[in-house]
Image (cartoon, rainbow, N blue to C red; front, side, top):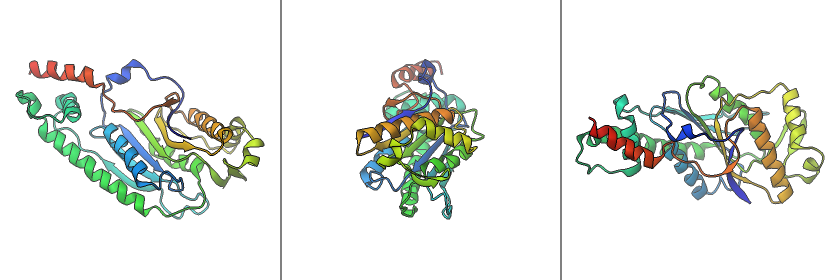
Length: 277
């Protein structure tokens, strides 16, 4: 049982279909290499591709790894890079129009003038893909999964990112296996989840003083899974509650990452813009 879940607290509104990229957009990829599906190159590459289809020009992209909270010997930040801007602000919508179509045969000089910007942006994304793959290979293996503690690192990166769109993609089965909060937490251990509840665990996190701030981020977990249905339900409920507590924005949906633009609306917008140029 596996799923890609969008986790947070309220429904997507209509404004997202006309979202304008800003210089403060942040995209975070958190990698839990202990998850079995993450070790499979095909699945990892699939979700990286989805992330790269979603990033916007001039956005900040950060790649983090889940590290052992007891040692913290390995830095969680694997990669941090800023994607290029489009040369002219007024060409921004056209850039996204071309990104979707990849069509430079249009006779309009307005569209052709955006070709260079598009290629620079695409080249930067392909370079980023290679850097992410290289970072993935450098993550050391771990027998434990300190996923809850890794949310501190995500929260730290989002602390000052208040004015743009924040997206967090977590590659993990969601199965915490750690020694934090003064106890051993093993989500797929039957004795553990029979003797606690997601609500009680959230209360323990609150009492510990840990208050993550996800700044209204859209949070996705790719690979959420468990061998038993009851464990899966526990894990799913916990992460829903956790990200609501952390101030994430979206409701749970079984959907994949999608580009921020509604293609049909921006097709029309692009044509209108160029006709008026």
